[in-house]
Image: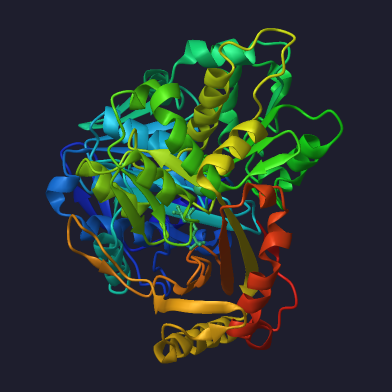
Length: 579
Ligand code: G6P
Ligand code: ZN
């Protein structure tokens, strides 16, 4: 059966049995596994690794060994995931270890389902001590693919590096796992199961999150848009977790037609898909939006529901523009921001579009390294309201994760607000109208990212070493073809709240006209190295705003490839993904 992995281990080990008041706690002897170091966002590996004997159990126990006991003993933890293969078995393992370590209560989504933003929302609403997210985000799922686990803190934000480093340290010396000998919990029904003082409550994965969305947005306003016969909407849930939210929110609450949701049922292997909402992996949606007589508004979300992609008819909104446009329109279109925006932030490789909005609205602005966790402190200290990343992440301080459905609702709010007075028969203000109007006001930051997935690590690392060496020798005024260097560095960030420093966060070349080329290795892959090249150029001249980004950026892209000797180091002729 699906639980045999754990059952065999528990019965075949010569384990010590400790009677606790409520149930039996076993101490299961174990040995360290190599390589349990978390990346940008949790521990992410092939599921086959996780399914080895104690692989997952070791990491979970190492986590409890790393947290101060007051952070979990007699506390409440949330548990959920994106519905991928192995989640149901993993949930049972996590519940048993949590119980054995003294956790009082686990709130788990029905069928183990909770999107990443929903976990963050539930932690905050229920004042939980933290939570586990069983997801490898946008990486494919199924027996041959990826699995992952993330831990979030009591504010709902991803655990900081100081904790994940500690967990890694503990995985290297772990020798025993505490396991409660409680039966598997039925996750298919909402309700409460008690084992002595330990409680598992199976919750509706949507309710708390939906309540939060209703408090952030004007649902009546959005409904007025979705119910128009001259507005057509389509959402591709990519057979991932957003499917569990799309129908209750878009259809049942906001009146979208049931047919507007495609791939709406979460599947363990995402229907053999790669649940990453970008121009390559969400091709079906892109084809519909660029096809004849396509819908007016299209969106997609990733495996665990934190990423988003926004499209208009035959029009792609680049994530860097998306966050800037949401920020520019938030105060009038979204009730949550009506009293003002505290500040704006983006990750370093994200284009500078948002910077211009911050300048115009006279708002505090922050540039942080790649990774949502860097926004948390700024939000907790009341300095940040809206932020985003080029990697299809957009969100606000309503929670401490990026939020795919939130981004879709934000865009719907903007379009609905702009069309409040558009009469039937008149032309609607479209997604592309909103973007073009924004470009006309602020200028356009042309942006593109080239990904070279699963390269040999050796070559990729050598390329980064080469670039670091290059920046150490470069100076202001150096000529790179027609571009003049302003500065080149390896991005380093000091958190203004806790003073912690994150260094080596990406090599960047910034030119006199504001153009940038940036190189980073991805921290979210599960095999080899993924090289990311980010290219950006600002264009104030409105007559050039309709150019295709690839065309507009061609000289800079060529420069990035030659400066880095990418072909030489990686052997790659072409990127795997272009956004
Ligand atoms: C995850 C994180 C994001 C991050 C992204 C890209 O989605 O939550 O905050 O921007 O990964 O990371 P990578 O290291 O692969 O570029
Ligand atoms: Zn994700």
